[in-house]
Image 1 (cartoon, rainbow, N blue to C red):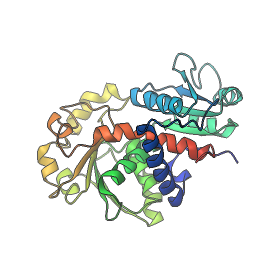
Image 2 (image 1 turned 45 degrees about the vertical axis):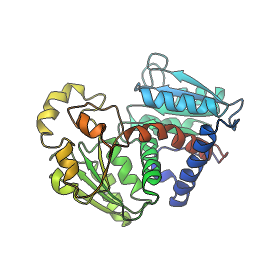
Image 3 (image 1 turned 30 degrees about the vertical axis):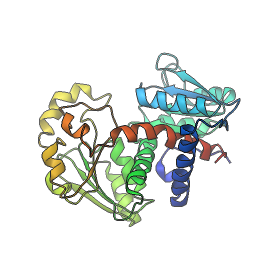
Image 4 (image 1 turned 90 degrees about the vertical axis):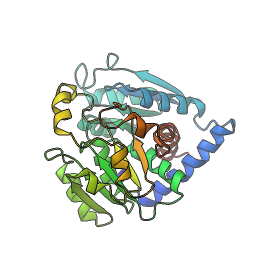
Length: 305
């Protein structure tokens, strides 16, 4: 049967661990410059309603190095849901390609694309979630810690699509996750309720960053105003005062915590130069691992891993 990767919960806990093992294997093959071409003579259509540097580079480079050809379709190539119906685009693009990656604004659009596509669809980001990012994040944590035991992640900032993906992951792997955000910027209430109902992880919503990060193994942040919210940027800077991840907040963890950011970062806003450039920062390992984690996900859903 066709498999899609639209949410982390599309994989079981065992499949998530298998994907990390596969990512480690593929990464080693790349580093050794092995002739590894599981996608020889395959094509992947990359549909971008939301432009991105890391998503395009990581998918396109990774798929090419595995023997395939990735076709970039930007916002002006396909006006998803405007010039043509999503279900029509899905069916046409699937006739030409072996897999589709879509980075879209509307989550409903990626769901509809997967429903009508005859080939696997992978979610490169929507306004609701960003599953490939969090898979890369956890793979990076595994590389640095060697295990996931007793893992506390303190996310400081907006309860956005990154947080929703962390919550989805917490329905599959046990962890202690705290989202520290200003009042009114909490994550989706339905996703939060589902995660708590799963009963696997300890989930907290806090409005005090200093308390939230105490004992955290990972301190994570993201931009305060995502793409499509830039007109709110100044207002959000006012609302998010006190939520900057700086040296003082990192010290408040009380342990040698690691710092993560999905990038791009607004240095001097949600975090500081000193934190990004510190020994605690693993943001560039995290960025590199987008490619390796996504390669493993592609192999998994295409039945090659």
